[in-house]
Image (cartoon, rainbow, N blue to C red):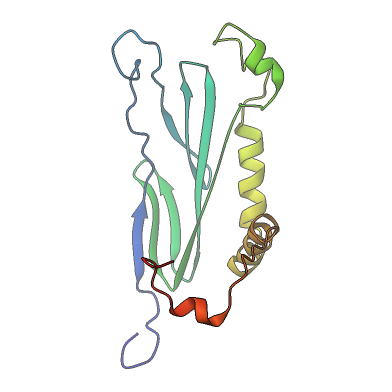
Length: 171
């Protein structure tokens, strides 16, 4: 704002993705617990994917931006928003992990997740659907989802107003 009025076209930034600790081991060389990394551009988004080598967990994340006013461009340097009034970034991710008994019963770590689908299609579909929604729609959906999980329990341990005046060291 300038003098109480909104200033248009003042948002310019570049966002990029980075996967840290990419190597063929986790803690010490030879432990086989490292991870791979692949980052690339796919049309209007940045994609980062890799495989956790210990259990062959394939993971993928996708980042996309929308702007009101200004422009959005995607290049090997990241997602660039120029001279926008508003910018919204959408990120979604997934893995090939499935919570099923066979995962725990399979003794070979490299076979535990072998039959499960690569997350690419599901991640792409989720991001595309999210980008069709406005920020207000996504926020309302988030609040409804959150409340469905965290408003399930109410706890009343019974107290009266006089209890609030007792210091904790005396309670």
